[in-house]
Image 1 (spheres, rainbow, N blue to C red):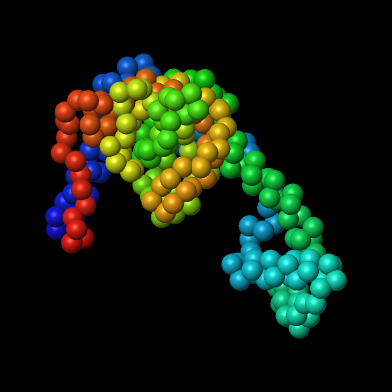
Image 2 (tube, rainbow, N blue to C red):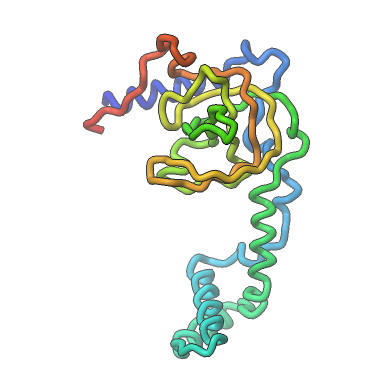
Length: 238
């Protein structure tokens, strides 16, 4: 019961941060969907309608054909069976394999393209902060993700849903996935860094960066100041 109460408490604080208009002034709140270039999301993807089993069959056929093309021995029975199974389902496996790199490029473009309309704008954005090492110039940084758990127990979000925060010298996230509302100049500024998270070193690709000027967080207000909130710690008994 104690852990349930603590989880409820942190989300209550998070809700207050999202709903707090007083500190926004004329600066708008952005939704994460507004960071995405929606025009890049509409493209032909012939793989989209495949079931997981069918996709696995296509991968198997492509892999075996590639190995055979190098003159190596492959399981011909498996190759024939997977090819026949796809053909029976009306799937053009040759066409799919021929388009795989084209589709990969389209998916990459969709995942990395940022919305030009928010580039250079000042805005508030709510998310969950991940502590990160300083930037090359020594400035403290963190990452902002839209959902708790991303980059540790689940894969990082697409780059256009990850923001590198260049934060003030007197503020740091006090915990992993601290709910936080930040304001500052948002820029399309692609970066790639490898940072330590729960599961080890994680490659973080961010389309956006933000020069943070204001922070609203339920942890320590500023470096060196006393905490305004009791820290939320998970109960050892779950």
